[in-house]
Image (cartoon, rainbow, N blue to C red):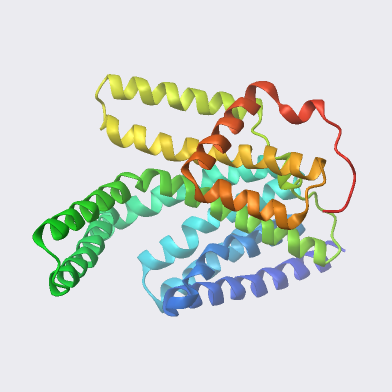
Length: 321
């Protein structure tokens, strides 16, 4: 029995390693399919959930070696091995039947750390700074924009204003890199969790899925963690350890995203509770998304919900969306 299970596990590990290689090659060599790289952890999660961590580790190592052979060691490490670590870990969490939210949270942290490791490896091995690369691309793009403004016959004042706007945009993008790394870690973990759960449900395997978005709420520990991060940010800025402006800007972006998400969940809950028509729901969300006042309202609702928990005092009407 164990021999058959081991044989089956090895066979599936080989198949899923081949799938990882296909995803890696598609993402690396077909420009419009570069998004395929984000799905590399999914096969490892499936393998880890179905069998155990040794099979997912085996598939990760084999696929990393193959990608290294068809490209180069740095590409193999950065594109497959580093993000694959999150897939191996999340697969083990799924097997141990951790709550989806806990698996997502830990997976996000591992994805963020993996991304930072990948950026440091790129810098150490090739000497290429990702920040400098982004700045270089932006400078080239802005140079083209400036030429277009000049050729259009615009007056000097208009050109100067456009240049300042482009410079402000470059500074904003550069400063927001830490927030983008954190956001990318969350997106990577969520997308792979989503597809893994979808595949397991399609194959009739028992697995706990995510609760509907309208129930999304930051846990007490998550809220406390965010509060600690904000306090540390204030402290670091006060001690002038790093650029206070960059820290504040990134905390602002993450705060708006996190509390905005919770605010949208509260609004979605009550729109369903009161039986609002779908077309009207879409209109309300568009207004909230596309206006600055709407964004502020959503974020404030998200912050207030941490302390009040608006949904706790309502019993949702069971009806189809």
